[in-house]
Amino acid sequence: MNSVYDGVCLASGRTVDPLGAEYWSDKTYLLDLNTFSWYELPPRVNYVEHFAGLFKNDVGEKQIAFGNGDEVVIFDPQSMSWRSGPSMPQPLWASTVVQYDDHFILVGGIGVNGLAQNDLWRFDGETEDWHEMLQTLQQIRSSSVAILVSDQEANCF
Image (tube, rainbow, N blue to C red; front, side, top):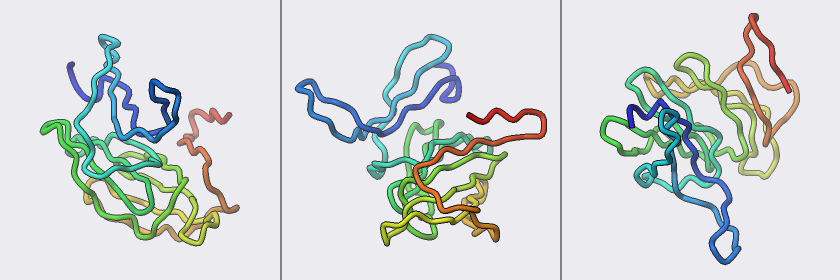
């Protein structure tokens, strides 16, 4: 395999065992886009059941996963190992994340009270610091999808 970034990373999610029972997978796989072969990555440091997203960070070449309450886990492709990252400022489930350069915008989610939130948080992939954004969502959201839209293209569906 050439690089961790020549592929598609698949982490967590619901799966089915050979007897047909559903369960949450704790495995992370990489599809090498050069050979179209699957590789299993090493086990994560923490079992993160509900990922908000898994993103590449060019600074330091690391993969960052957000999810499962306040957990952040970071994969280092050089050492092929995971480590715990800085906890999210508040626990959120069913959030979504969009990447912009080396920043990640965490959008909405379900709070500890079980209700959807309108929070926006920015995670700096280089310094690994969290910053609360002053603007909040126009409407409370969870379990949604966010994409980056530039003035050059707007593909929303």
